[in-house]
Image 1 (cartoon, rainbow, N blue to C red):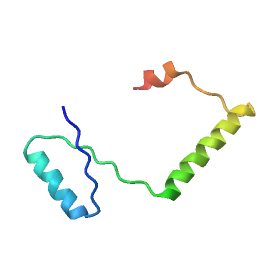
Image 2: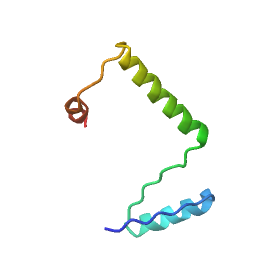
Image 3: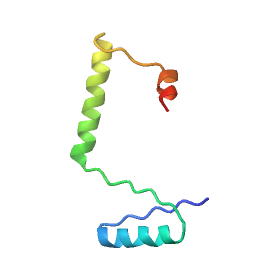
Image 4: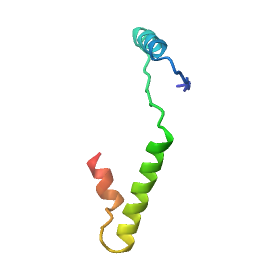
Length: 70
């Protein structure tokens, strides 16, 4: 298997490419690009969760529990 990364700002062309891949029985995963604000909010949320754990207000889950959900 090979991986190709394509960055496109034109949604029409992206859709055409995905349609082509689908017709040729190839799979594709689309990951929308996140903006700075969204990334900063995610980091802030993680920091708040870590602080809550340190203060004893939040309990962490075992990795086994997380994996069992999958």
